[in-house]
Image 1: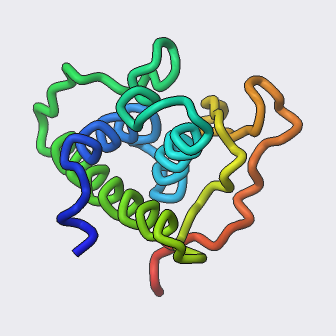
Image 2 (image 1 turned 135 degrees about the horizontal axis):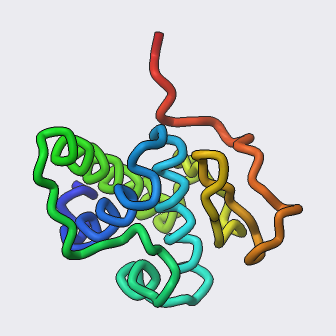
Length: 143
């Protein structure tokens, strides 16, 4: 299966970054932070690990973070599951699948936090290109 081929270290790093950058936000926001990282990987910024640990980039990533409450452990575990799901979708996309449930277009490489949400942009500090969330949300709750 695809999931067994995923790198556990990548999942852990992605989950840690997601927890720090969007832990309090919904799954759509969480997923977009990881798609932003993957967009940078595809744009030649380096491996997933190199992109996440680049100086002054994903400052929510903290390899020394301790998840010492049930709440933080549960949230981290949810970020792990979501990261594994996104990395699976990313792998499928690389294998030629279309409409894998990407939540951020490939040309959005940056984000910043404002008003308790993340705003995704195509160019650094270009606030005219903020992502409008027009792709389908694969994480919408079923009623």
